[in-house]
Length: 483
Image (cartoon, rainbow, N blue to C red; front, side, top):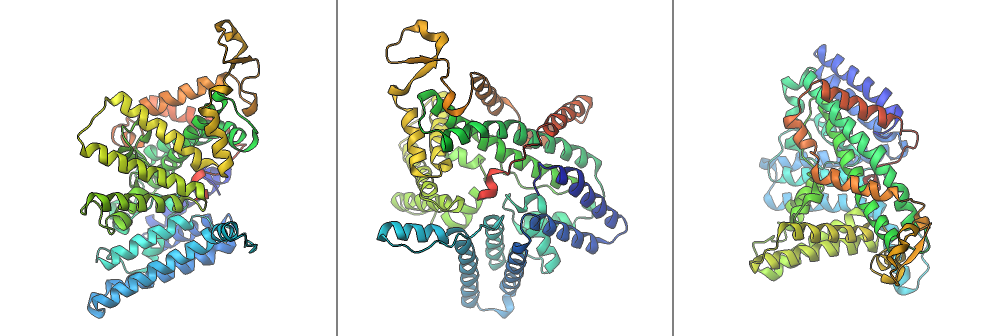
């Protein structure tokens, strides 16, 4: 079940909302929480009920371990470290089996010319997110930062459906106090109005903007045999904007849905394409994943408290692991390597005291991100090389017939200059509008703080919802569901 589907918007969400607050109105708090857990598990198992035992057993295992780690008086420090290590390894092993087995087998076959058959294991939905979330819980329990021991509360923390599938990756201390607050046990009409408004923005981003660009991305990366220079740039920029609006759309929808239940999810997206350097980008993009990588990988490795050489190594290791987390493939690993290398260069550059004007800083940062996304999107190395070669090859410039008067000898003119990606000249307008939106519009963080619930906001919300509903016939999954 997708946020951008009729069954979710018109059936699942209204029913869960009404039943949850009905139970709370009767002061059946435990039953209401139990119902919300049940609804979240139903939401999860809608895709494949066979993976329901997986998330249940994972929750039970981590809850028992976390409870044991909290019992300071009954555990010696050494045994707690061993227990934490065992639990983290177990979680990573589970994730590794489902997500990376075929990747390791295919890589082994390629290196040693072997022929071990692949297992073709289906990746369980959300396993990367609930695994990282529970690892964070275990580490926090080891540090004595968790205080809830009830399994129902823990299950609600893990399965709360707005953030279950694609994040944000939340901490126990961020969520459970909100569910326990008596002020959140009654309907808050301001939160409801704000939640619907933010949800409508996210839905519009996903089904109207992101899914429109998706067509050109698929044609450019997967279908076209060759690309000319403009087609290649349209392909790469289309994916850059598709991923932006797809992921930010999911984040907005998750924030909006959670607000209906009086829950404020942590900030996970803050206009990342406005970043002036790569470090600023990672402070803005998938913020909770960046926080996890920093707190549970980078800092334990020594962070920036060690020598410059070791700091650079720590950055490379952290972002290569971040690339592996996103997907089982060498293109993801190389994408992580590129971002690690960019952070190393940025840190070295800053240490020398150099600065460049903001306009050039933004231009360099955005283009690096756009180029690196090519490896992130490409299914195979050849697909990435095809797009990148065409982006920087002056031998493949094709312009519309109307510009033939320019008389440039190294340019070919054609009426079908975007035919390989089945686009027309209006794609350039769409890209320009996307640029305008990402550089000038507010994000959901600002709306939560400054939105005035007046007639203009109501009309804008209605416009977004109606336009989005008209585009729901071609429902597409969110890109981060694949990770």
